[in-house]
Image (tube, rainbow, N blue to C red; front, top):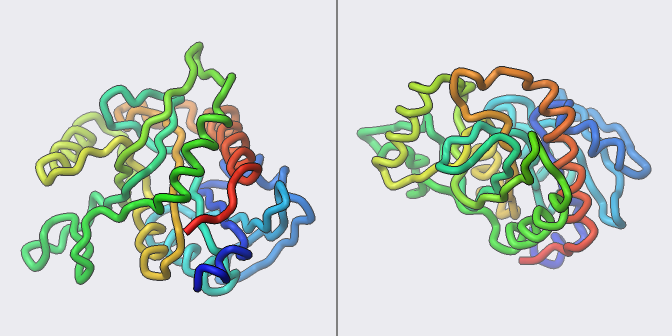
Length: 255
């Protein structure tokens, strides 16, 4: 898609779970339900911008399929991923927000044919977020999170690497090993989840701007499963509504 074409294209907002998407769907104006590729997409507008809402589903392959459909079938010009993640970086606490500036697949290992974590035939291990869209989302996070609190503290906004893989990381020892291996190869992850790096790879192939913002629901340790549905509904969904609303209100697609 050329730059001029992308300026008028819809923005896609991806979520992994229905609970994460619910608040965004409530804000969508003139929603139209479209079924495609075995998935439900919602087309409409918000803040004067054309928007497509979609559930990525869980895991890298499912997220890649949804992303390809958004680009090839719906013609979206930008993709923003909202949802939850486990915090693994120093100082990243439950209720904080991580804005992904880069994305790595922590379970990608085609060695010895290619270096560990490198996506074969690309020469890349870390896929960067789109700089302009990331800058817009940074300001939207700053505005959207104003006045919010979780467990008596205001959410901190972190920027950095998000690691994705096809397993739910929820054990302290598993997390320690995962982070240590990434660090040994020069990667310092702040959060771990199951979709972002796959979406980033598809967007890179198509030349579509992408960035993900994740609310930290746990520390990816032995308590990672506790109160997850409640947190998604009462915290992460609220954060997503506020951040996406601020993004759509102030931003225009930049290239």
